[in-house]
Length: 519
Image (tube, rainbow, N blue to C red; front, side):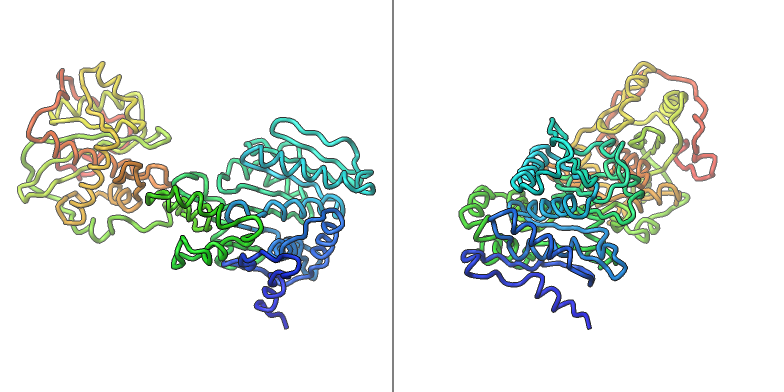
């Protein structure tokens, strides 16, 4: 009967002290998910490597190589998808080198090996060519001389095997058919545009395999870490057919202890040493520095979370509890405009005090950007005579300011500091029940889908890059900031008085009997 514990103990056995007298790194991954199968190919790959290279393979490298080459009873890959996450400078590229060597020379595979930086790909290609060329019997298998140019290396063998090593791009897989093995090295910076380019090339292969390898993701530095994060999540969930191995030190272990370094780095004592770990640690004198050390040296990833998976920052019950369809308004009005990142949808929101001491925010227009958008906005300014018209300088809506100014309306642009202040104030007032609204479902949906993004200098703002349309809540936030900032004095908004213009074709909320402000 199969035993996972026994399998793991045999795969990641303790190093032989005679062969590896200084190796003290933990060989077994902290997180691991694998499935049973036949390791014949794995053992053969290890034997082939032993004949070609005098450098012995560490137990953790042998174990991972066997899992990559494991077959099920039907003869197909046990793990058609594999994920290996390990801190830098431990030798995970050696595992990939040996996997590609066996795939070329024994399995006759067509392989695409993609990297983020060409230095990484060039080194692996050069080493692989040298390894094959060092053997007289393998050297005769070159169908043609290997090629190497900037960003691309090619190996072709007489058995029909072929390997292309390349930097990633949207068309990296074009022209490659029947792709048996696809390797995404440095997968911390992998996005869907790069993966979709080769997905269909693998569909033609009878039994394709995809391998993702990387150090951990730091979401603050790696904005394209979602693909690897999704594969990691699949591995943690023990998705069938996914091999997952993650070397990392759990958070409760002290970051400056040798035992922690040994736990996270399987090659500690041979490749990684105390001196190498201490050097970056001495520079990690800030919180950001310690986080970076944790990610790079200890495998403690700062993993991105897709916005659709994050909980609402302002709970629906809190927002719904502030609904007031008939408030009594008093004082000046502030107006703000925001536009979605794809520039397709415009949202216009007004903010005004109520006699109850709350700030009423109302979505007056939410619809497509159209030729009449500026004219409609000018007519709203003429009709409501607001104390300020606010647009965030980083918003696509900032492109309207030129046409607005030409029409006699000057907008006030917010920068990063004002946006951080505005979002913090909007959140605080919402959680304290100090806002009011008509119960508009579009605005409610935007509030529910709004999540935050941390700003470099401290504070946070709404994350516009998610899948949810949040322009209504961004505009509401800016309108609130405008009212608080300019509600007691007049900003240079309306320089000329214009006739009212028709709504440019979107949802004019006054027509839905929700308007209190007077849109």
